[in-house]
Image (cartoon, rainbow, N blue to C red):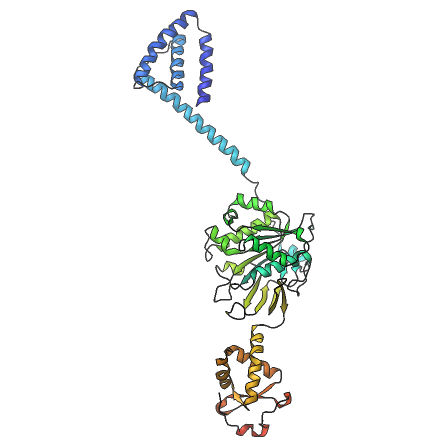
Amino acid sequence: MNRIASAVRVALYDKLDNLTPEQNQAYRDQRATELTRAVQANDGNTLSQESLDALDNHLLERILNGAPHLDQAGYQALVDEYETAAYARQIRLRERAANIVKAENTAPPAALPGIVQLKDLLEEPDEEIRYRIDGLLPTGGNCILAAQYKAGKSSAVGNAVRSLVDGDPFLDKFPVQPVTGETEDGRPGTVVLIDNELDPRTLKRWLRDQGIKNTHLVEVVSLRGNLSTFNLIDPDTRKAWAHRIEGADVVILDCLRPVLDALGLDENLDAGQFLIAWDEFLAEAMAGESIIVHHMGHNSERQRGSSRLLDWPDVTWKIVRADEDPSSPRFFSAFGRDVDVPEGGLEYDPATRHLSYTDGNRREGAAGNAMPALLELLTQHSALSGRQIEEHLMPQGHPQKAIRAALKKARAEGRTITYSGPHRATMHSLDARHGKTTGTSEKSVANFSQPTLHP
């Protein structure tokens, strides 16, 4: 409005300069009278500069062109008309400025994906399946590492970082296509670890223990205490973060749940919103693969939350404990697109925090634990039914599943023999060929009576 008033004032000065001496005197005489009337019309209040400009303009128009005198209503209408025009101009200027800013901030429309006929698609040669981590993480794939409470998620992440930049086989088993510092298209390649679980001091100590050689290829972001800044749902924030990690080959987020909480997203309903934003984040950063760490339920081996967490990843890695004891053995498995790694043990070196994948699943491990007690029991008794064996070993702390797995393993290894006993019970005895005799011959099996189990 001030700029409009200034423009009006320039025009007024131009008119005043062109007045004859008689017209100038008439202007001065009439202005004093009209100003008094205008102030009275304004309830005695001093007129604004805009209103004074309107009054002067009307006086000059009357002197130069014979404009009529104004009454109180006329003065009010004159001021209203002027101020309305001024406000309208302000609105137009704001809208024009807003359109300019919007045009500056609007990104160009994304290129639509191409359409290809199936005939042409099938004629294209198949590309060889490639892996960032052989048999575990396909090139360009997304992985969710789901683990039970305190099962070793952060240790597994540290092992992955070390393998990805130093080229060591992951878990001492799976060959890696390491990050070399330069991607195929010439961009600098790195592994970016975004951590929100560990205190920065603990994170530093644990990564140091890994003995990573190519530390210049690892970028670490500690978000603990700053999670609200990682709002990938917001396009501007996502763009800023993508620019910060541009060129990353592999991006690791440890872990998902705190991010969802910070953004007010429900794990059971809204996880898909973040995963969509994560995909766009990786695309904007031109990143390759990603690993997102997520918790399993306390009493479950399925990652918590929306079913979207099951169908989104190309591959799911799992780390579980043998039982609820926090110190019990850990086991690793993986399944997904072109990935099928059976459950195997995880050996842990506390000095280096290195993990190694070994043969043997939980069932075999439990069977191995129960095996000595089973063989000792069958040494003391010529033959026992499966139920009798369970009744004797379960009070010693051996789970039923472990006992049954041990029985199956002992039979497969030729340590025991089985045969039908009274009441169609399956009887178990040590195999004499294994170096121990049971005192029961094949001939006497048919007349075998169920023994009494002694404590």
